Image 1 (cartoon, rainbow, N blue to C red):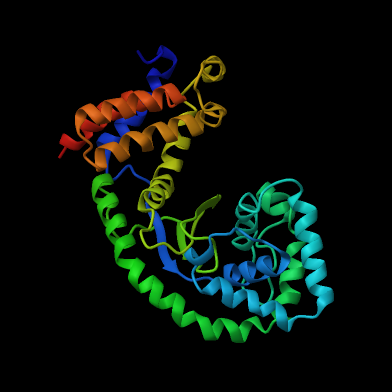
Image 2: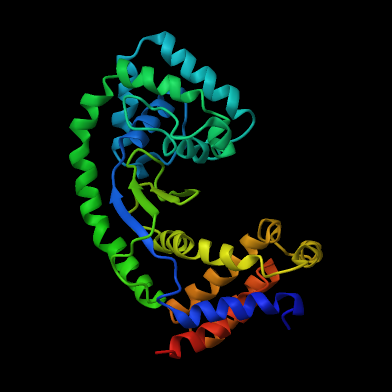
Length: 324
């Protein structure tokens, strides 16, 4: 049973679903493209010592960008390595990638690489390595990255040409389920970037205010579920935020849930996270038309993990699907 304190939120959320498409926040632009900032960041990271070993599974672009360090004076390479190692500490290389991606998408285009907002307003992970932007500017110049980008960009364009139809189909099918009309005039933007020098099969999702970013590594079989999950956040985050104030005293419930065995603390740390993830997980099951028995098993699993509203949303979405 859903606790009474959630009643008003559930009524409001279901009302919004019932009113779709008009009630859904209208998205701005969705772009799928390569990004020079990420390319330069990955080249500089490799020069600094970033090394996630997948051997032959890596796209050849990794070997290409590693050669760029040979064009740079040893002093700069030493400073790159010193910066990277000092902030890596005892963590793995895999754990470093997300914060450098977070920084890259918060910078202006080359050759400036300047923060797009005040330092105190930047995401904490990007802010923790903000000084790397100074090294990026120097690396961009001394490694002749402008010329290298012109040389390799056609490879990126071809790879995106192969990936694009898959992503466009995903977006069209998701929009159809949400009943979101094409050509919305909202201010939110989603950029999907393909970075061939990143580790294979990686998906990094970042959001800042109304801007969403998905950065993909090379993959023979793109993890479209992760991309769709980010796309649903793009549409639904503001919907949840607009209705979350209707809950009173929900912190007490989340605190109790956090003590339960098997609960993912990340899900119950904030009401917005719990509600949004509950809605998205339920919606993914409905979009994929998972058979009822399997869907119920997964709904129960999500509930036990701390996504307390997944059972409600899973049932409510069935009614939503039947609305004209």
